[in-house]
Every structure is written in C-alpha cells, then in structure tokens.
Image (tube, rainbow, N blue to C red; front, side):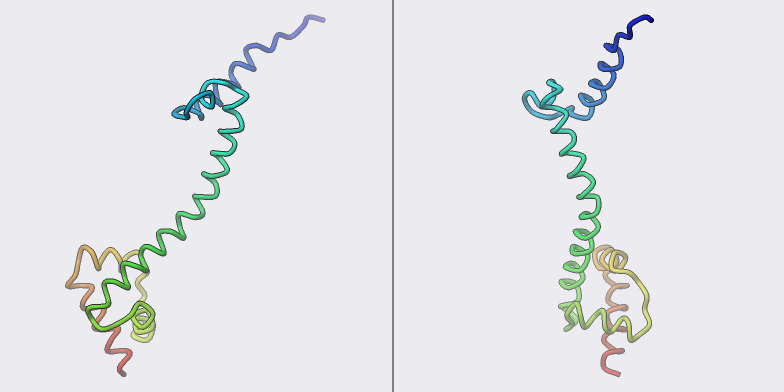
Length: 119
C-alpha cells in the first residue's frame, strides 16, 4: 500500500485559517498555533454579537424616540401607550426613521398618540 502525504490537505486547512485571521496583529495572523485559537474566538464573538446587534439597535431606536417625543410633552412609555390606544401599528425602527427624516409626519403621529391618551 502506498503512503499518503498530507501536505496538500494541511496547507489548505491552514490557508483557510490564515484567510480568516487577515488583519490580526503579530503572530496571530501568520502562525497556525496562534491564529487558530484567535480565529475561533473571533467566530464566537461574531456569533454572539449578531444576536447582540438586534438589542443594541432596538435600544438606539428607543432612545431616539424618547428624545423626539419630549418636545410634544410626552415620554417614550406614554408615547408607545398612546400609539397602542390609537391603533397605530408602526414599529420602533420606522418611527425612529420618521423622527429623523420626516419631522412633520412624526409630529402628526405624536399628536395622534397624545390625543388617544387624553381620551
């Protein structure tokens, strides 16, 4: 039986790790023993932060909405309560975008929410 030389396979596997480690500092980018754990850890962070990004953006939209409704004499929680009572079903992302880019439209929505709270 002939022997199997594994250089090609090992080189291909290493190449994949090095490609993922591109941009890392020091030996972490060009030594397989350092690059492999660094890439594995980077993948863990990437997986975790894909989930965390959704939370972060929702928090940002809420902060923007809170700041946007203050001039109308509302707080964020009262604003959302008013929207629910008035039957407006627009998500926080779109509301935040409206507050930034379409102030007149947002003002109309805020007034509608305020009216629903008063009634």
